[in-house]
Length: 234
View (cartoon, rainbow, N blue to C red):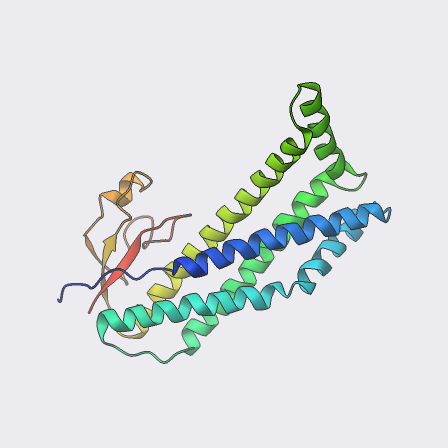
């Protein structure tokens, strides 16, 4: 077996674009909730509909799908370069995988945003939560606006973390699909080599595995937020 070329990976620019889209969806949903509360909407069902309509207006699925295709195409080129084996752009297998992933991401974003809104909702609890935080900040001598901003930043960080996990998930699945499609049977497990790597994965650094016989816990990238990659052995 030949030595592998550098690892395939999800482009940082595509991952950053997905994080930005998640944050944008959160902001749109928040504005939608605010507008609905201003109109006197108190029904959980109506609040959910307002948020879902806002996300549809954002063309969320089309944007997610475009980013998914961008990730899939980058991985296709990287695997082709590493193996010398050609796979046509937008192959049926990768396109189906990316389309399914886009559906999953949209469902996850919608469920997360509407669920959070409905937990806070209908009687204006979402607004009162922010207001009570501001009041508490004022009473302690802190800056109320800064406290509200802190809560917003915290929510946006959660959305960004979810976006990174989604990008890694697609990268792992697309990498496997592309390698198998071009006839790659074996890969080398590579980690990021930092202190965030799981101990179990660190022990697999440099080890050779077979796609048809995954190790315990699954292939690189299978576990949530796993940044490990499978380097093809041509």
